[in-house]
Length: 145
Image (cartoon, rainbow, N blue to C red; front, top):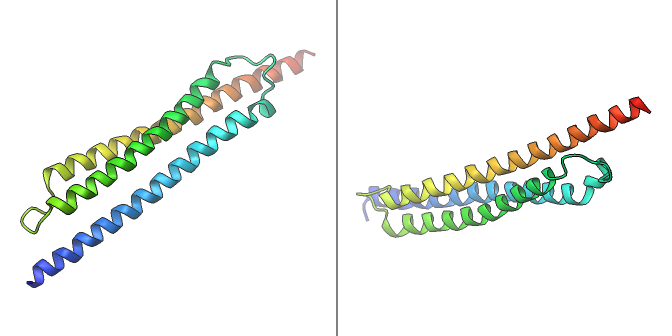
């Protein structure tokens, strides 16, 4: 085995390990944030805003839907990452270090991750709008009483 082939083998292993670690950390973070957000908004919304007399209640199911869809897309992202690693290990070589299929699968994974993160941001934003609108209503009602 030549030095370049040995180096390529080492580099390939580093790419695989680095990608695996980065994706695991990103996935773990998104799962934790989405699951935590879903849990907090479902379990404690009534403690922040009493549901009796609350306005814009339709924002709550939308928030929950975004959290859940983001969690499901995170699962798809994980599968896409595994598929990209499989493509890389089976098709990459010193002559073709970045196979087209590997690049395409990475783009798919990236899209899943962006959508997942975007849905999380949307869910948090919508929940904050819901809480803010209801806090404003509660403060107006308190001022008038």
